[in-house]
Image (cartoon, rainbow, N blue to C red):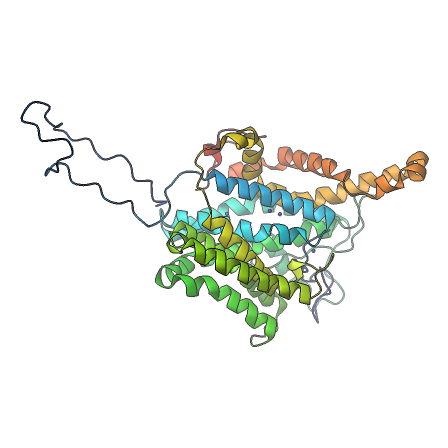
Length: 445
């Protein structure tokens, strides 16, 4: 559901300024199969035992296991991911502070990624799973970097005067290859006159925090899963404790790159772990009344913290990691606990299958490029101010972001056509331009 930058920390240059917390401008155990056929079918003559009588050949059926959820693509999760992605684009265009409260997209997406990661770790060795996840993430980023960084360099971007050493700037460019920290970008570079505004570099660089956080969660998932199996709820709640320690001062991190990693782990780690706990069957052992009592209380605490911190447009949950951790945890806990595990669409949703499949198949591409599409759409829309009749009689329309929404999605669809095939190559699939069908073809490995 893809998510903006404050002032740089002391000593950081403009190109190295940390992206802000406001982010504007990833053996699944199978369903028990039918029992093996008895090679000696029961007799049907007079000597046959009465119906229902127990025999040595017909033991009573075993109860279903209470472990991990059965395999198969969960269309409920596909729906959540599609809603989250649409909300991210909508939020970045509108900027309304209440949208992350209505639906905390980033927490939901981390939870779904954690669920998929746990399913893969139950099926294959951890090194193979981690390599596979990293391989699927990086090629779309490399394509974005090849286009974006090249454009920034051509626009005059380079080591700043305040850079301690130019070598450090070149080394930090490596985060465009493996985003263990936030890649630098040329903030404030001129755009393309009449086509692309000056915010294009920020729109391209800031959202990469999500890939950095995702990558760290992937690397730590084998340890997380082991801890989850040993102590489920202390493990799930540990990231919230980390976020509280960062918020209230017991834990102080001097270097902003480390702090940003820890901050996002605290804000969204519980969501990732809830996804893993859901796959492991932990949530099914929690009584519904307990979830419906705990989640609203935790969510209310998060909302109170956000309101106390001045929740408003331009200063929302993305600027408040601790409030984010509480609110996202509460919402994700409810969404996962009521999960209906759809392996086929309910009748009312079947008409949306193609669109939801497309959004799931191209989630990384949409997330990486939608902010650039918003900047492009705003630049194109501004040309309408040159029409005197519109400026005089329809200024309210030109000032509204609503007419830009279809244009943003048209441009995003164009990016899907131009760049989305990298997701297929990364997943070792046959490239497709518009993957709206065959949901099994884009199943995560």
